Image (cartoon, rainbow, N blue to C red; front, side, top):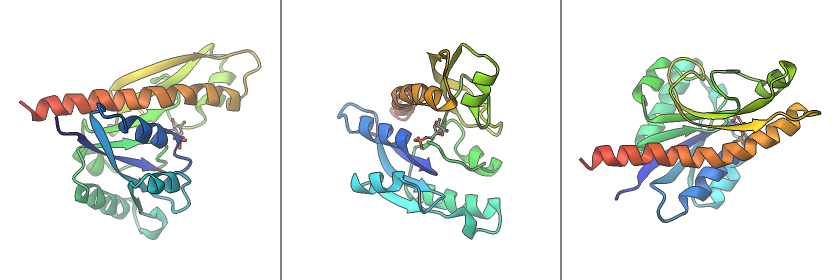
Amino acid sequence: MKKIRAGVLISGRGSNMMSLIEAARAPGYPAEIVCVVSNRPDAKGLEYAAAQGIATKVIDHTAFASREAFDAALGHYLRSQKLDLVALAGFMRFLTPALIGEWQGRMLNIHPSLLPLYPGLRTHERAIAEGATVHGCTVHLVTAELDGGPIILQAEVPVLAGDTPETLAARVLKEEHRIYPEALAMVARQLQAKTST
Ligand code: GRF
């Protein structure tokens, strides 16, 4: 069956992007990562992607006068890559409803909390401050509501006595790297099934 064409959007380190690229190397994986886009020229993840022979593209948001203009350029590039799916992986930009609408059901995000708990930033710090005993991560479809789209997969980790935001983040990140490739594969298989009928 034809592999689903996926693009990954990053802003920084790119460890989730790496886990997607690694998973997609397996012959039976239903998607291929065809490009990695960053809104920041200095995103660490770009080097890894380029070294893997994956097309990389920087669309620097500071070069655009408005969010709409940036999203128009981003949308144009994603279209040019003939993508079926887009995976946000530490992509630190709000997207316009127009772009989100275009990718409805085909754009995923990973978030470091058990949504609907702790949408937004500083999730680990907030979980510790509230005395949470369980925390985790979520892969969900992107909708206009921030971190609010339908959930595809979640993983839980314990919050341990003495955890700092950093130790907790590291425990969660391990799970992120496990569930993101799994969730992307699930959505890719659904898309494959749709296009083959
Ligand atoms: C991850 O914790 C992800 O859940 C959040 O931003 C972080 C990105 O890390 N959205 P990386 O760039 O994938 O290493």
